[in-house]
Each structure stands twice: as C-alpha cells, then as structure tokens.
Amino acid sequence: MRILIDIGHPGHVHLFKHFAQKMIGKGHQILFTCRQKEFEIELIKAAGFDFVSFGKKFNTTLGKLYGLLKFDFLEWVHALRFKPDLFLSHGSPYAAHAAFLLRKPHVSLEDSGNWEQMKIYLPFTSSVLTPDVLFEDLGKKQIRYQSYHELAYLHPNYFKATGTAAAILNLEENEKYVILRFVSWNASHDKGQNGFSEKEKARIIDYLAGKYRVFITAEGVLPPKYERYKIKIAPEQIHEVLSGAEFFVGEGATMAAESGVLGTAAIYVNTIRRAYNEDQEKYGLVYNFQSEEGVFDKILEIEKTKDLKKTFRKRRTKMLADKIDLTALMVWFVENYPNSKNTLLKNPHYQYQFK
Image (tube, rainbow, N blue to C red; front, side):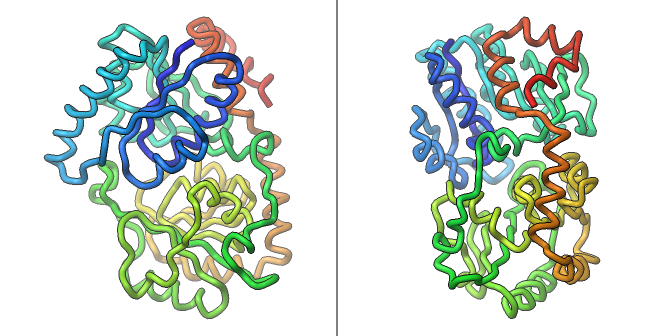
C-alpha cells in the first residue's frame, strides 16, 4: 500500500510514527506531509521518514483562510505525484479534501472534537476513529476504541523510560524538577478560551522555582523574565523528561495526557474540556481545571502525596489494564480497510485482541 499521512501538530508525529515504522517494515510506502508550526519537521526527521513541508502555518483569520486554499492545493499536487491508496491524519482538512478529489479513502483519528475543524473535513472523510470517551457523536462514520491517542506511542509496547532525564536536563543527582506548559492561544479552537492569568502564572512559577528546577515548554516566545526556565532539549526527548518529572502543570491537553499515561501527576488548566483528560482523572492521573482557581492548592496537595512517583505508577498500571494498543489496531485497520471498518461496526469487541 501507499499511504499519505498529513501532520498538523507535533503530537501527530508521535501518534503515527510507530504505525509508519511497522507499515514500512511490512513493505508499505509512507509519505508524510506537514506545515511548520513547532517541532513537526524535527520529529519527522528524527524518525527518518520521507516528508514534504508546505511551509509555515498562518495565525490570523485571513491567513488561515488563505492557508486552507494553499495547503489544499499543495496536498493535492503531492498526492497526485505519490499516488496514495489511502490518506491518514488527525482531522486534516487538506488530506480529506485531496482524498475526496482523488477518490481515495481518508481515515481520520479524532480526540479533540473541535467542530470548527470537523465540519471542514468530516464530509470528505471515510472513517473516523475516536476514543470511546469522546463527548461528540460523529454519526455512522465514527468507530470508537478503548484507548487514548497518547497510548499509540507511550504504551509500554513502544516506550520505556531509560532513567536518563537527569542527564538530558543537566541536573544534579536526585535533583527534583517540574514541567510547565503554556500555549499561544493562536489555534482556531483556542478563540475565546484561556488558561492562566499572568499574575497566577508568576505566582506558581515563583513558588515552584523555590523548591524544584523548573522547565517551561511553550508555544511562541516566552517573556524575558521566564526565558531562563525554557527547556532546551531535542523534541524527541520530551517523553523521557515528562516521565521523570515530579509533576506537570500546564494549559496543553496533549502534554497533560502524556504525563498521565506515563504515570506522572498532571494538572490541566484550560477552559477547553478534553474527554481523554477527564477519563484519566477517573484513574487519578490528571486533574482538570477550567479556571486557575484551585490549581495552587492542588499543587500543594500533590506535593503531600506519600511516595508520589510510586503512587502514580500504580494508577497508571490500572489504567493500562483497561486500554488497547492503538498502534496495533491502526495497523490492522489500515491493512484490511474497508473490511476492517465493517468488522468493528458489527463487532466493537473485536478491538480487544489488540490489548
């Protein structure tokens, strides 16, 4: 098979990388397409995949409208050259539109439920794979699976911490650290949303810096007063670092979920609710806040947890027992498409063989 995978976010590279490696190992051909936003290109290069970059994304409303036309055209042109049998993405309108024009199936993974994006790609998409906990009902195209996107790359079948976080971060022996994440609020789904105020952000950073080494990962440019906390590592090392952190606090849903599936306590602060974060809260892995109120007290509570890392590792083990290996499901689903779609629609329990 020839499969074109479109990438819209660094997390999408992680989502599809083990799938791509397995498919290439089976003799299939994979081409990644992407736009430059944060670390997408670096991650694709680090994994050694063939790819085409369409240039930088646009942040303004007018720019995004222009970008839709530009990137649709580029996706179509490169698809004409590559001749894919199937398109795969995390809700990419560009992949969906090109697939429709070329009369090929587009399989989307979706865990965010952003209707402003879904209404652009859903009409042109053949199947949508979603976590079973997703709030939204996407109709007949939706196939629910019992897992999270983050388990496509952080399941123990694919990721095991090596204990090298201290060396990566140049820490002293037994020096404890925390990870903070702040978003830029430029994405289409971020309009009208918010997380921390600058005042509360400063309060939390000042408190944590007095007890731990603080590392901040952020979209865009950090204010000069926080520049000294900016994490300076290769993007592919972030999961090793998250695994070793005392805890995570941030506005990014994906990184909060990643922390949770790694067994690191996480606090997610954002007016945007995410079903997978809330499902992880049932296991005591991620604490969700739609405002900054109560976050500082939750940090103090986490700090008082006896054997913090051991406690959260046990919670992780319980969560893993309930979830499937998403990458294994994707490989089977794509190789056997469209029969695989019919199989799961008739018998959703078929997925449990991929635990």
